Amino acid sequence: MHNPNNNTVTVGAVVAAFLEQCGVKAAFGVISIHNMPILDAFAQRGAIRFVPARGEAGAGNMADAYARSTASLGVCLTSTGPAAGNIAGSLVEALTAGAPLLHITGQIETPYLDKGMSYIHEAPDQLTMLKAVSKAALRVRSVETVLGTLKRAVQLALTAPTGPVSVEIPIDIQSALTIMPADLSPLPIERPVPSAAALDALALRLAAARRPMLWVGGGARHAGAAIRRLQKLGFGVVTTTQGRGTVPEDDAGSLGSYNIHKPVEALYQRCDAMLVVGSRLRGNETLKYELKLPRPLLRIDADAAAEGRGYVTDQFVCGDSALALEGLADRLEAAKYKADPALLAELRAAHEQAVASLTDGLGPYAELVRELQAAAGRKFNWVRDVTVSNSTWGNRELRIFESSAGVHATGGGIGQGMPMAIGAAIGAAETGSGRKTFCLAGDGGFILNLGELATAVQEKADMVIVLMNDKGYGVIKNIQDAQYGGRRCYADLHTPDYAMLCASLALPHARVQRMDELKAKLGEALAKKGPFLLEIDMLSIGDFKRAFAGPPTNTVTQIPALGKAAASVA
Image 1 (tube, rainbow, N blue to C red):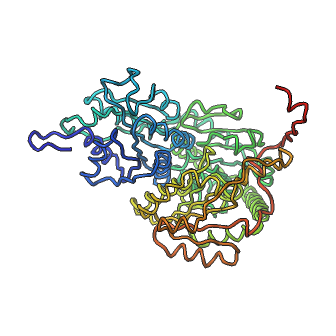
Image 2 (cartoon, helix red, strand yellow):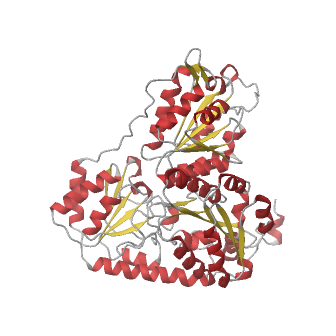
Image 3 (spheres, rainbow, N blue to C red):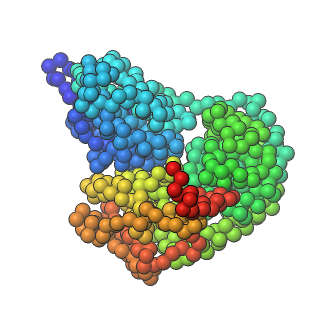
């Protein structure tokens, strides 16, 4: 890393020193011959904790959740070629979620690069692949351009709309010697400032409304103070799953993320304006864009291209959500605006109806939700995989109280929750947030990244994994029942004996087979520092009262069985 004779360092040391200046406390990845100069510098400098994941896909999820749960830059390092390909799914998830992530990948030696020589670890046109799954992808082409390229990458990752940025650094450049630059400070992050005229017009329109709703997405998680000002003026609040916790979910003026339930949709129709801020109004949170939202529909977004997406926009303001909402609150407060107080009473009633309906549909698992909420308290990370339990209750309950406390697989990919929980637990440890991490997973997805359990044990990640085990793809079976005439196929899975598996890993484990066992075994899990697997034996406990058959939609199509004649047609 360092040559004492001429005061030079490797480029790998420059990379490490720059990340330190960016405030990075932990990074994730898999060590390889094509990233060793950087990781050697990490080890020698000792300022950044490196978490050695068992696979690049898991490492990417860890860095993503670290970024989201700490509201800071996540960092992941991979090798080139197959390793860079392995992280692609994780980058898609980070891109969907808008997680600010820096992915540093190695690359083969520059003399052989792009020559089509099938050099070991080379992937043809790797940069194009990375561009397809990242907000941006950059290649370092010389020792002299390393720092500038990294500074630009971090700036891009942290500039709204935030997202993952990949940087290729060829191995010969990583190991080259150079002088440590004097200025390692990152570039400033630009915040788009909304125009005064646009805010004047928006305030004028909202001043005419008596029953306004504020729809809060993930792009407004830093705007909590401004949102509270609008709440004091009588605005009702509803959040997306990404916006959860921006307003504490026990706030009387908030629906939480009960955004598509029938009582809430009915409430929307009694409102006379909706302001959508920092949200893409995604299909699965709007009944595939058929959810009836109030008019006028007004939007604030840092991305000018968001105007008109999904829904026709009656008025649009381009700008940072916090700046725009602060400016709006200034104008409405000066005008002494007050909304109809009846709105919040109706909002509370709609919320209670939605919660009661959800709880009733859980059957025996309502007790699980109650016990988890009591155990978690107010300061915890709530990390969820794509599973029936998350789709039915995890995306709305447990209630969370901080804007960075909720992490879920936004893009719908299964198996990402457990490595995400590791990243969130490492983030809590490195930032001293005091949050215990709870992870909700289903057995079907859980096995995809099973090797990362070893990472959790090795790193002593302080987390409780709540594994909902029904030995199959439960949601697939429900969809097959609802839409395919009950023709079930490919959804039953050979499942490990988790007690034996956990024993082999030195991972504490308990299995709940009756709900009257839950409280004691959850207490056992909370008493342990480090990872704990709490297995919920769904085959013993029973089914949900209401089956969940996929993302909400207003129509269900029945797929007919193939007749003999149809089946024989080529």
